[in-house]
Image (cartoon, rainbow, N blue to C red; front, side):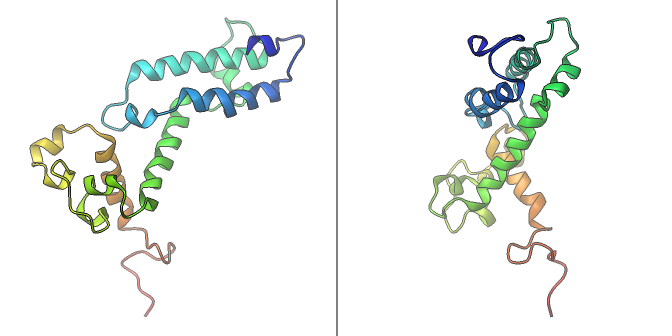
Length: 167
């Protein structure tokens, strides 16, 4: 990326930011669901991503390495990587509501979300309370998220909660 431009010539800062967001960030975060979930986010990976984003922000703006990181990221128009990961994680959880009924992941979810599939032997519903407490998995996070939105979301009429009715 440094070959494409520096502070005096090459790509404009807007183009550098676009390149980072559309190419580099997507490659760097590929498969983040495997290591970034509520019960066990891997701090080492997050720190590496923060360092990467700091270097990119300096490259976009053309600032010195001793510049303040939060200020440079704000000027470059980059949100903190942890907030971006939380946003992507929320979208990832939302994706589970629209997967095919025959998808294998449905057999790992709680019965109300399994879409008429028989639960697998290691499904969250078949685990003991102690096993569920010790479990650190993206599937557990998806189940908790689905349970939290289930009571306030009506798929046919999202503006009406379960406690209300039409008639």
